[in-house]
Length: 200
Image 1: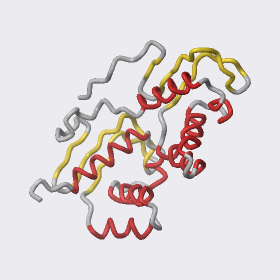
Image 2: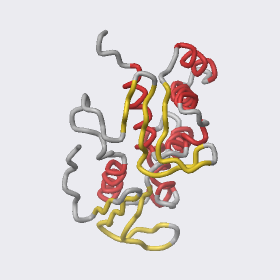
Image 3: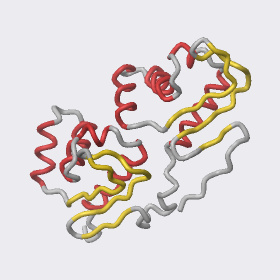
């Protein structure tokens, strides 16, 4: 398992949130606050902020942070740079999955891979096909699966990946887009384990 660095005194991280103590009070939604709490991002939120920001990486990030903090983009824009750096750090901590082993060749405890598929244990239960599940089973992909996802994605690589993972897990893209980003990354890691051939 990864050993995470000790948290600074101004940062508290829980399973689905990061609370950042600001260096000075700031206006958020018309109220002076000395802390901001970010919730863990879902794939849907990350993609929405990317769509809003287009090629402007900073706007994408500000939009995402505003959404995760239930604040306005003007509120995030109004933070002092030192506080904005703290928010970036808190967000980075939310993206760390302590369930990934330090050695990427080691199999994580949340993953079981067999010749015909993989079982991925998620960090929490989600509604998938209207059933609460904390595990998803991915079947091993075929060339047909990859071609169908590529055709359906209209050239969007991110969408192709989501369509493919939805097909392999017998779920739908809306359900996968509602996963925390770290859980979606677990599905991606499982997929890469399924297509990896040590003999090649």
